[in-house]
Image (cartoon, rainbow, N blue to C red; front, side, top):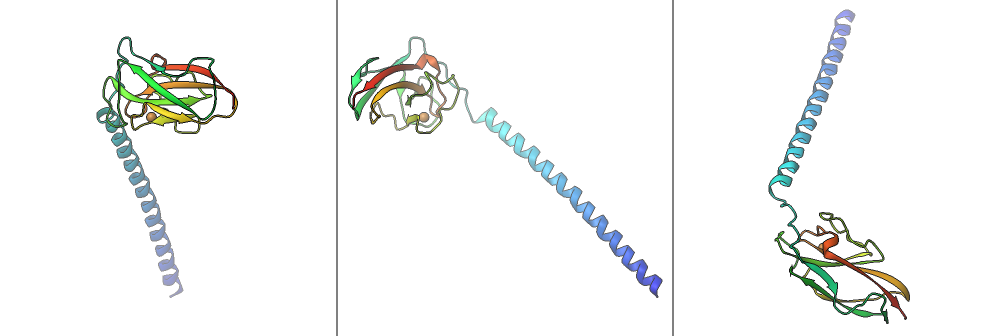
Length: 170
Ligand SMILES: [Cu+2]
């Protein structure tokens, strides 16, 4: 009687141990499968739905229409943004020969071609296709960079960037 009970307990223990290890390895497999399908999903997205960034047309350039390098100005002030040989459009599908403006304040002189412009206090996006804005800066010297980028914020690089330094009087 005691022997039989002991045998049953041991059998149950072995069975449950087997079950657990079985479950464990199945979970591992599921996770692996999921990871693999996730990876292939991401890869196919990169390959099929995100187009390469268009090249910068010959002679294209950006410029501040109303700000000269070294200018002394009062804050707040208006900034007019200009571009040659590119169309200004709102964010959206990547279209060759078009994009939107960004102003970097006391940051990089340009971002490398293909780099997504960050969104923070130093990097301002004009994603509705704006060509002018008003900025408020503290008194002193500030560096302003105008950077053009494609419909998904990928920088067109130094060819479509320009930097001026302004002196804010008050
Ligand atoms: Cu942007």
